[in-house]
Image: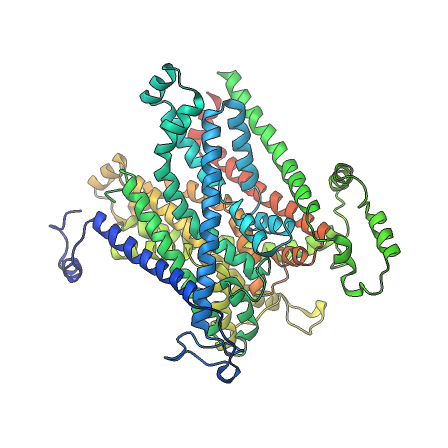
Length: 288
Length: 329
């Protein structure tokens, strides 16, 4: 976009902010988002058990307690940070597991022959054939709920879409000259897959991880909100929100508002990083 | 060439048949491996009164001692005859529970589906026609933010603002409390439907809007639009003549293919607003170990998603001549 023909109003608007090109913008947003996430993780480590203090219960937000306090006098800010840190760890683990599954299945589908390919795309269809949340509930139910149930449920259900992407990518790579040459030199399928194809997939997988993370974390929060998994003592965001439901009609809006908003901000931060990196990697959308 | 078409069609039919069956078997296997004891769940409240002999008899009655494969076959043949068993929570046939709940859920999901489709499309068109403007950026920002919003949190906020503070709408449930079933009017049901439906549709907007925008930008960059512009067509007329037909189909297809997310969203919305639909029922069934009901709803939800995808596929083929012709080659 050239700024020669921009109307006056726009010129003023862009004059306020220093101008950065796409690469710099991406870098800045990434750094900001990572700082936010590091802050949450550090906060989760530093804050130990939030104490119950009945003298200060049900306080609306103030300078001392920016997110207010709950019916047991616990500081909601500390609980929220702790919950976010828990969700962060859970979401990252689950997303990482999904990426590994997607990489393995995608590679297998594209290099393992026709039957395997058909079977894997059938498997993808099978997982996409149930509402995602229902699948997670099913798996969590099978494992008897608990932290483990939620983690495995979320980890085992986020690979299908990424598997499709990776499969398509491998299909393309498979026809590249260097792969053909390597095969003619007598390298085995496995050797070619791990040495020539896998390295090309790593950036895809990394961005996939960042883009899966928001889904994983939102699903985790949703499932805990519904009452599966984590026990009420663990301050997961889903639990904080489902507890707050009982106090909403009493006018204690801050119990739900701030924890949810913090979750939104965290997920949005991850999403922004992932999206920016994806666009930078994809030359077609780099100029958008 | 004809052979390959038949072959690809054959694959499709094989898939269409095997997938629902696989979903059923898969769900059955998962649930039968659950450590949650169905008998314990069944007697929950009176576990003091039920002795070991009685438990034994319940297990006998349900055939819990038989090997899994035999149970699967028994269950499968019952399902094929339309018998999904008896719900333990409601003490009624699962089919009846599902029928009743499904009607409530369909009202909710249908309203949300239409609203989100309509508004998503309009937002997408506005953004796409004004690409790069502040309006476009605002809509994009809104959609991306929505995609990272926990839907149940949005529901809680809506509940707080409109039901608690403004008291425009009731706080929850599908019908007013303390009113006889026969006296519930259509208006009552509608009032209880509004908040959950709006919550669901606010979230459903993002996907359609972003895809429509992308598609419209592609169309607007095409040669025929350039030519139309050169003839002096602008604004709404340009969109009406050249944009609409090209972007309507993907939007409709996408909306039908989004049944899976719609169902997931409905589960959460129903939970927040204690709306008595299928979503609420599946959560209760899973939390309280009601295996027949859980399995029944899983199957219904799978059929629901399957129907959506099927309709999307059919619409695609019937409406778009390019895809139809592609099939025959």
